[in-house]
Length: 379
Image 1: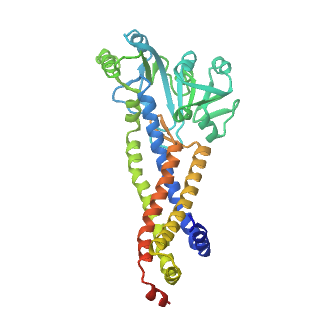
Image 2: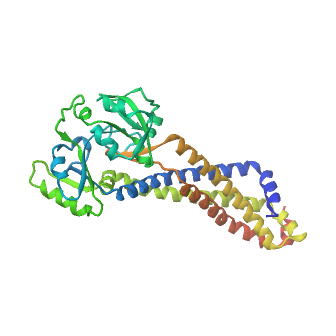
């Protein structure tokens, strides 16, 4: 610690190089955190849905919500099965079934079942206005923030237009990316007469019921028609819907690794240049009593501080942007929120610290092992 003032003075002496290195490291850690935020969102989605005990029944061999049409009265028969607590018919409308950073998803649910089937609370507006008007909708605060929507506004996408009666918040970041409207409103929207059919059925099970066995039981009932079902636990259904997007997220890990490599390369290059420029200075330090170990620690401290400065700026910027922007991506009406977290911030900081430590080892060893006399003669 007694070397820190000297190290800071040295870094300031070469401020242009220091600023460029810190900036480059900050950008790399910023990207690393963004990639990590997508993975955090995916993990959070899986964890929440696996613990819910909810099934999704969809029309078999259909992939986009726009193509799935189940008879709505299936809910009556499924609701009578042992172990089934409730069945909620859901009509889904989305502006894009493909992977998108600006996906808009409407869920049409009977108003009386919405509050019971979703764990969120209104932070603006009121339920009375929503339940009273069939063209009313409530939306998550993430959508409201991205689109600049307030209670009382009219929101339109394509031929679909709703009056915003409320804005809600949820403990589930992904949930805040959806818009909920009346079931019949979506069924009767312009260009579609879907009365009597729904996109999917959400099936809530009693505690202790085997979800896999119940899926098989439901699908067996409708195997001969009139419309065959494909029933899965909600987490499995969403993972299947995300499909290629999950593979893309997994591939993005390599981008995160590349960012770590970039930090390592930047800091190591700067440390090597610093050692080469100060060969005589390090020799002088040794002549006045500095040991090789002390010179080693000086270079290691410089490398560590450079990397940590960039890391802290990158982590802080990423957390701020993620919190403000409420970004999400999705496919087939399933959204993944870019989730900032304390764990992600700590991981980014640790990565910066490790990269700075590793980057400084070789230059520090070189500086500590330099012979004094040849170094003093160095021009």
